[in-house]
Length: 154
Image 1 (spheres, rainbow, N blue to C red):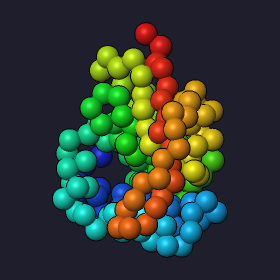
Image 2: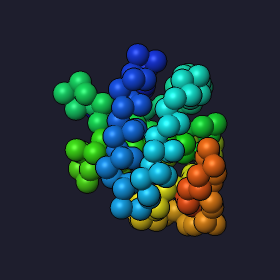
Image 3: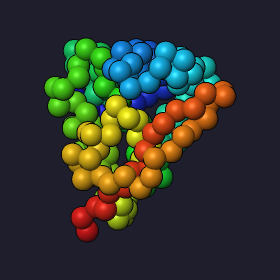
Image 4: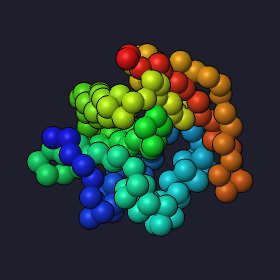
């Protein structure tokens, strides 16, 4: 079931975020990169702001959050994460479809995202194109990701 996230979901969302990165992304990023990436959950205010200001969705199975995604403004897909134990079950596709629909309802003609090495093929399969490879610095550690964009149907 896809539904709007609530502030009370924050701790569960952050746990899912950290555990997914630590397991699913370990083939594409070093232990130091993963620990740095996961450390972004320590900025509690930033996460509260994202839940309150973005179109933020969670996917639940048996009342447990198994994925989440968010749309910033009308055209930037900020988050798309699926629980490490629920990969390849269609959850990311359902969350993505809900975000794309919301973007189109808000009048967006494109959708952008900064995508990890791990998620790149998922986004390409949804029609995104790589704009450029990026090296993002976080606490002095470089993380490669991709600026990607998709034109939306009118």
